[in-house]
Length: 243
Image 1 (cartoon, rainbow, N blue to C red):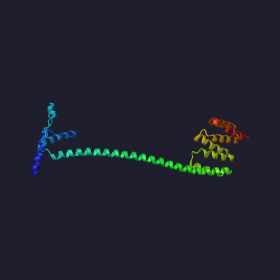
Image 2 (tube, rainbow, N blue to C red; image 1 turned 120 degrees about the horizontal axis):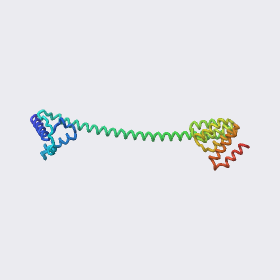
Image 3 (cartoon, rainbow, N blue to C red; image 1 turned 90 degrees about the horizontal axis):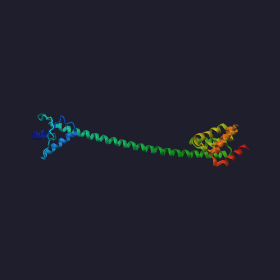
Image 4 (cartoon, rainbow, N blue to C red; image 1 turned 90 degrees about the vertical axis):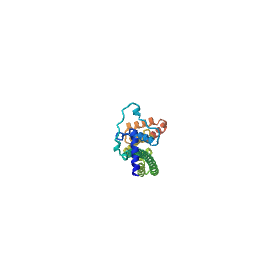
């Protein structure tokens, strides 16, 4: 067995010598693989491998001292290079998979958040509508303070309902709390709906109650400007207000 190993090593050394292989300078893996292909060619008794550099008239490569060649190190070098390449490819695949998973998870979370917000909004609007309905019922019974309490609760649930603010403003007008009515109307016009007819008319009503005629006239003019198709209704409201 030992004699066969010595024979194999001797044959490998002779083959590498024939191919001008110099492991000390063959750090480039692609070149090293090409050289191994030449070795395989010779070992299988195929066409001999020509030295391209010799054909081109180039300088001969430095020859290695094959008496001191460690064949096991040569084999280990090939194995190490292949391991590095395989590990790099695996790391790149893992990074891509992680990136894809992160993107997918992000999109799933965005969709979940959107659904959660929509569900929460629907629930809040339902609860706000219940409170507003109770407030309207109290208003019709001329229980304005009670109506305001219900409108307050409705606004807590949904803070961007112009209808609820206008309803509460009218309650304050009925209670002659004109300054509070102005706040609700101004919030609607500045934050929610600039053209809201009820907000302009209730604001005019509040200024009328505060005896600020200039502001009253200004609000009426704005109501007409923003709602030209409702002029008849505006005139009727103002006439009742001045009666």
